[in-house]
Image (cartoon, rainbow, N blue to C red):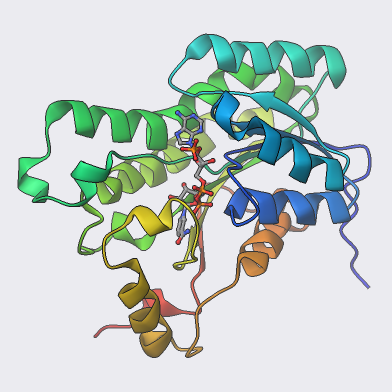
Length: 257
Ligand code: NAP
């Protein structure tokens, strides 16, 4: 029987807001497999909630706002002292201003476009760059979370669809550049799950219904299914996989109508 054993491995999991966060589901799976986990949260406001969750899996926590380089550097410095290496990196971070997810996409202001792409796509490149000495120590697997709006026009996703397209191309480019350092980089494209970020999308509840109706499996996915698929990509079972997008969407992406 194949068993995923992450004992002795270190996982940096970024983007936990609360118990509904997809990053949290992944962190729980990593913990079950024996990994040591550090969770990051975006601001002081989230600290009590994230510390409470972390306590249940013996994880540590650090603050990291990816729009501020010095907070990423601080995370790298702390983990260098604490662990000396990172074998798994989970990037579950995205943000767009509410008004840029509501109005006409054609009217997206420059600041809104730049902010969404900075937080939701550039941060993957920047975090990898700033933690590279730790990632290349023993080799590493990186997983970022994306959505099908990168490939199709989805009402209300607006600038977030643009950000996800850039994110997925960055995964391919990073996988090429970092492969020789034994660092794998993959994206996991999740179907809709009710989280804080998802509920910011206008019409999200209708979308959940439509998705379950259309998807081959005739249901929506669970955050636990995102967790186990990410565990696979992060583990040695996926040692031959890099630069790819794995769909965890009950098959929705294969449909043609
Ligand atoms: P979530 O719980 O709201 O997670 C998003 C996280 O990004 C939050 O922790 C948020 O913190 C963080 N973040 C925003 N700005 C940040 C910044 N400047 N620095 C650091 N962190 C920042 O929602 P989620 O659905 O789990 O989202 C995780 C990822 O999954 C996202 O990339 C999302 O696009 C992707 N995804 C979600 C779905 C879905 O249906 N839920 C489907 C496909 C892909 P704050 O709360 O403080 O803003």
